[in-house]
Image 1 (cartoon, rainbow, N blue to C red):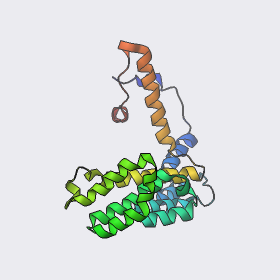
Image 2: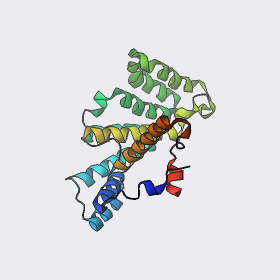
Image 3: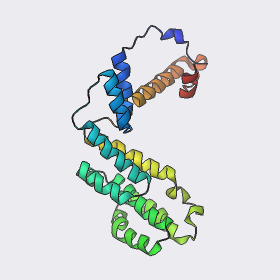
Image 4: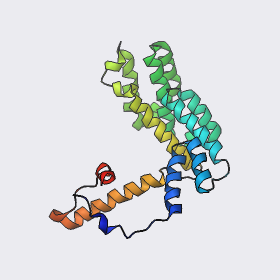
Length: 215
């Protein structure tokens, strides 16, 4: 059972605070047109170049989702020049997206050449060895979508890389990697977990966002 709403009804939030939380979510997720409408209605101000940078992040995000990783890399280097040089994990994941796209298109020779020139150098670092083995194993299957490594070809994997890239770009330009709304939900979950640990057998049930929104 969730906490009694009467316990927090006295906590007042001003419209400006609520608007700021909503705006943070919209900017984080690159909802440009909605951001323009929302700021027009609420009177909130955006930092200089915010809309322009948001549109660039949106394009980069969609390139990654669509498997056009080389274009995503090119635009990322234009927007955040040394990000990928410093974040080698992310750079590896983006390059792997292009490799996977070649494999999915049955361009096996091109995929092998790309792996040898762009991915193989990562093999000098221990943490990338197993990942490289998984990627290279895809070439052994006529239908890589049915291989044990099928998840590497999935939309979920592209989504993961695109989300990681978006967060990294935000941090690179001194913005939070998570929206205010995400941080509030995370904090609520942590507080509920702490309450559970303190109250023992009489603890509140685990926090559920879906249940909370229904209450």
